[in-house]
Image (cartoon, rainbow, N blue to C red):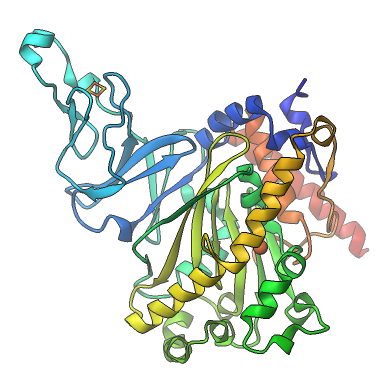
Length: 449
Ligand code: FES
Ligand code: FE
């Protein structure tokens, strides 16, 4: 029997019950309580640049259509026909004036309003009130620096409050160029047989695995394989981890702005970044620019890497499977040669065939396999790294930070997951967070005394 949901995770002590990764009942509840009550990434503006452009995506398991409207705004609605539930639109992406269901032909406009019913007079005696049978609209959409997020929930705070201190890390990457970023055309999609939280949590919190899981790839990728020999890249590049509101970010610190660019083996890219450093420094601080190669997650399932220029959504597909949708993001104003260098970097590191990506996926599927055992499922996982050693106001970084080798962000991730799964309202969560922070401040004072 599955224990009550609020007993599955003890973030204060760093305990995780593996049933959170396997149980069908937990998963069903996640779709409603977590995915139904969080801000979810829908699309980047560059994917739907013109009026009538649309793209199909998912909010949890729910298919939605994201559509650029006639007035330039972006709206989204459930891609489900109100007649018998067929997908209203079966294309992944395109441009249209209306969407016509391929089953019986009900047609919807760009906002999802039902505008045409075939044989309306004979079949419905003109008695159907079309205004009542539009597609279900995503009631709240937020645009932040060209990225669109949506939520079904009226309760969740405004997007910028939800993002909170994580905005610092988001802006560092996506907000540094005057004209922002764009996504390289083409979405890489692949399936991994693992729970979505393995991927999402790792991108929020896990710097620890890198030099073990990616040892071979790190050596193979570097121009000078001796670079890593006999040393730990984690000590070479000290970093810090941020965790807050379920989000997480971990970054190395470079000693010069050009540092990360040396990874790309592209003089054109290095030159362009250096030549445009002033522009970046107008938009973000020097410290933000120096935090490179970072891994990041906006709770619950949107992640990016700052070095390899990949961003992705981990779409859940049952407790034991995810569908990854990944893109390369590039500075919009960069010349083609520079964009190509970013693209090559993503492809060889974090893509379905990337040398790092395959390392990560193998770990997650292996764990999921082990969890088929009943003993393995009835166990406790340790998430205690760095417990009690969080700090605030270090180097002027916002929010709660710790050494890069910590599971602080993972504990924050599971704390938020657990709050939502327990059905707490977002205002209750805010009160609890304030109390948690007060407790944490007290702990810090005692430690410093
Ligand atoms: Fe869409 Fe019948 S299911 S028209
Ligand atoms: Fe990894």
